[in-house]
Length: 250
Image 1 (cartoon, helix red, strand yellow):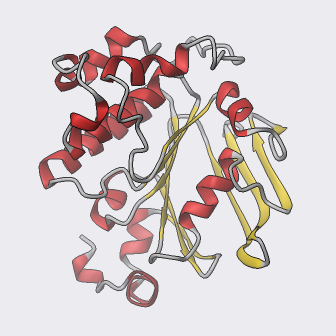
Image 2 (cartoon, helix red, strand yellow):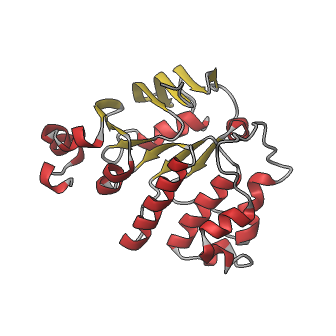
């Protein structure tokens, strides 16, 4: 088995005096999607923020390709090869679609990692080919896009950094069923091109359909770690921690 691209080792994360993450560990390998499921307020986004350097853990370690990144600035973590698709899209609404997309390639965001020859190289043309609706709106302000288009823009912006690891925080939030299917297709394609994806998601059906492994989080601790099939068979976890009956998870 190949070494993980991303490894989280027994991290403990706080907001001030509030103890949020209680010793979480996980790993994500190239060409793998690992999903984090849980109710609101259980620590899912804090986990993403801990990996990205936005809310560093007080104890434990986060390793990218075998090297610790705890304590590094968020921009340095991004430059090293970890991109984030944040919850709520967080695009720059006053900038055009083109300006949003090329930000990761600007002189302000120099890449420090070498591109993996086995992984697709994302250029502006490649991103626009993946998201043709953005190609039609290159000169439009980001704020003028629909919610679905803004999500595509947020994903496209992350890809422009040519990351090895992609952190996706609720990418299906607020999207129509048709656009949720599109997000699913994109994640499958990214896995095929050997990206490692850490996915936080409320949409259980989406997570079950794309994830290779799933962790369920409750009050800052993992209460389940296994495959989608194993989760589907675990009625206790589905009911107690996700609020769904086993028959609804299919």
